[in-house]
Length: 324
Image 1 (cartoon, rainbow, N blue to C red):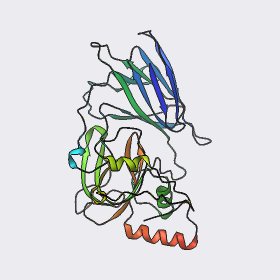
Image 2: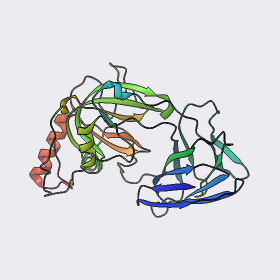
Image 3: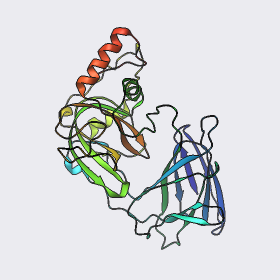
Image 4: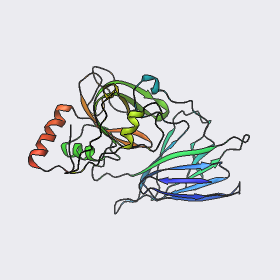
């Protein structure tokens, strides 16, 4: 049985088969989503058909195999910064080529990265997910997340933008659409080899918005879970929520990832994340959830953001209720 969760339209579907040698077709028509294959047998053929802008046919697909539960995005104690030991992914993944299958991921391929990417060919892209032989009666689930994006970027899209300094228009759009918006000070960075990214740790000084993740959060962070469950309706003239939490907020930390190829800062030798670096003051962190993890979109200095908010309030041109 498999379950495919399409994040962009929040739909689900299920299918079961007893044929251990059969190939089950699965059509993925969203830009991003996840697939969970319970008790995998035989193989799945995943055919990607994401919505694309008019006139475009080719796209890039990134797949992240899930071998361990993600740690919470927001946390109080550094002890919560650890994640569980990785389990063996019970399947092999191949890209469908012209006349052969090209290996993309295998549990024993010697590559620690859980994130693999490939491109479509003449508008077509398909994966074969082949179950490994069963070893005993234990429960096995092959779960992975995927993201399919157009190769051409005609317009700025914060959902797919790479971390870099943002223009004023891009900052405003990122603020209005991000899953996490918070004033923060960067306190550390660490290369995460299995995600081919750099993990940035921030001390949050004022949390503006944090939407609920589709993965578990730590059971000990009850106050933070209230934030996750309570998404602010951030539109012009909206009624501000009256329930707020202040206890322990100043000690809240958050982790946001960025590309491992981000340029390093000349003085600190840590990632220069969209213009932000460790120990260089307060920033406004704007991050979107991609492939299950918060990914940094923009991080303007607080002074820059405050000036933009004041200007937008003065001329009344903002697209949503801007805050700092």
